[in-house]
Length: 96
Image (cartoon, rainbow, N blue to C red; front, top):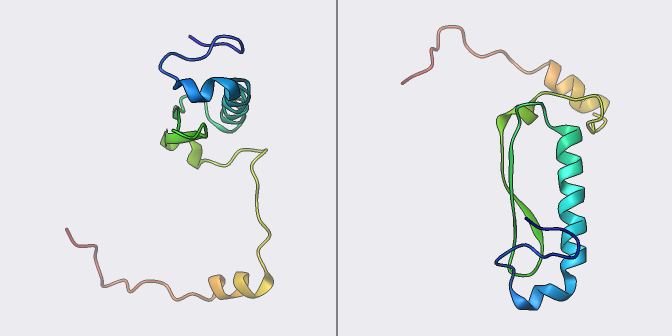
């Protein structure tokens, strides 16, 4: 277990001075995951050698859209190009 004043076990000695920053980043990452992830989604995170908090693995449950997710605007030209894309040939079947 770890807390703001109790660093996580196995943390290198040179990261101890910046432990509060690392702890804050972990808390922010967990808050984002709780807001963006579904009820069965899972996340595996770690701390790199330089103190950066990294996401190692996310479950597939994040693929569905959520109300708070970011959607980038699509230009009209791209929308028309995607709408006019040819459909795949019906005679082709996926191979093994």
